[in-house]
Length: 324
Image (cartoon, rainbow, N blue to C red; front, side, top):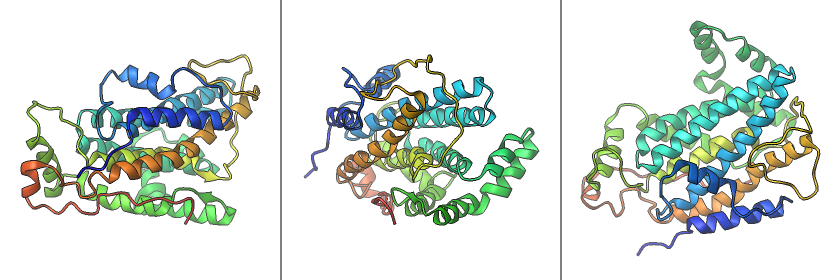
């Protein structure tokens, strides 16, 4: 018996309630609905449609953060230019994952998920380590880029740094982030590179489709959407939020900016927008858990593919908590 799932409209309704709870004025449609219309791919009847709604909302919120950083950079604040560029990169990564998953190309989306993860780590460390950010800004050649990666990102060095720095600051990284990262990396290392396991995932979903390339959205995509949401949250999940330099112009207005009931100061508004990321995450987890129940074993209900006897256990995400 299939477990009923929360629908796309359920997700939209809860997103509206979250904005209202955070003090934003009610709009006829959410930011995520505007993003959905821009993509022009009908996935509202998919079992995982509610997760797509939350992904779309993150894409829109990232765009607002990027606009603030761009405005600050044009006023001469160099770190803002660096933040702007890395946020734009995250928007592109998350959008690519969203589009690939919409067409059932889950294995390919997971390759981009690795980029989303490493970019999220980099953005997180920017906020904790000025030298790291300055060395990042000084990368001008491919040789410099390779050296930077080996110095700071290889062998889990930045994960270790973030963990130690947050402990020193007595800060919290919400969402059991460290456990989530470990589990995600274990799975991605097996299926994001050429391997028999990766081949198994691709051909199993292909057997259930009659198209040339694109496919229906498989249940395995739950893993990809769950961790895409989590990796996007990473730099915005530190409590208390690290301070960051930012210049704002009160005359500047952004397209699709949700209005706040009481806040007019642009810097205060920016902080309230940042708070929407963990607020949405806490509700997203409820939707993620509900949709995961459809098929804890990703080979379930896959027709011919279910008889090919490949072990796909362990793909379900770790259930996050507020803190470890």
